[in-house]
Length: 328
Image 1: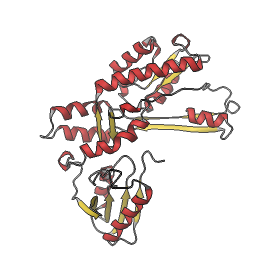
Image 2 (image 1 turned 60 degrees about the vertical axis):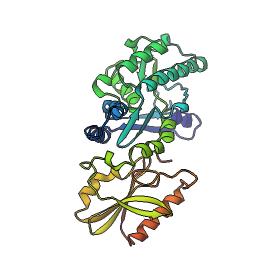
Image 3 (image 1 turned 180 degrees about the vertical axis):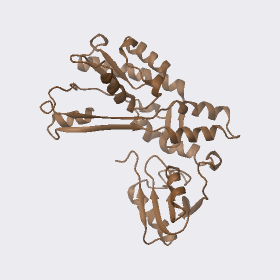
Image 4 (image 1 turned 120 degrees about the horizontal axis):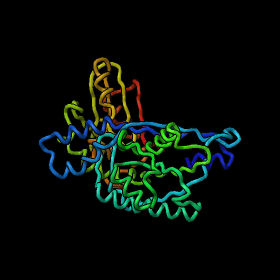
């Protein structure tokens, strides 16, 4: 919202569409499968139990210049802070989430306090002047602690976690939409939206998460990922890939921060009539996880790896299906 608002204010655009969606099915099903394995221990249960609270939902909003929407709700501005030193407390990708719930609650609430203090100083806000708090809601305890730390009456928060669970950043937009629907946002009311600063945590923690929790094939449920493993040697590093079925080739390329698991349903659906090839980018999935000194993590390296794989498999023509998550 703040990025789009700034673009409108500078005259670069007149309106913008802000969209956010969270889907929990894949990660919840994969987590349930892992926690059902005989190899699941107490530490794995503690690390991954919070993943089962994740919900699904999506919301969108249009921000426009006042001239185009004179009767719309006014966006006045915002402020943001991040605490990237805590990037290991909540790490996740498409099929796994690892959370230190106690530390995340402690440091997340502390970050919210500092952000709120900055907002009060820079924008002149106060808990008394805000009519509705639209929060990124994780749980009952998290919401209560946030209200206590920031100093607002919990009755001012429109709560959705009892019904939708933790819908991630999408929860802020969903809260706003449902509050409008419930007539909690009316003319003259002041609404404050608050969400977690997660972008730096996602990028910083991703590679370590994959190294620690996906490299071990025994932690991947055969029921969810029933494929044979293949590896291509890339200068002493192993690039993992799937090669399923026969027919016209279909090559699927995952984005960040996922791996071939992302395409498992499509592989099952297409392998009866196509040759389906799905590599794991180096540093992800079941491929090796070299340090920066061993492998240059850049687009050219990805292209070189793919060219080497297609040459190895003698694939000259085919269909390429790509998906990016968190692309820049």
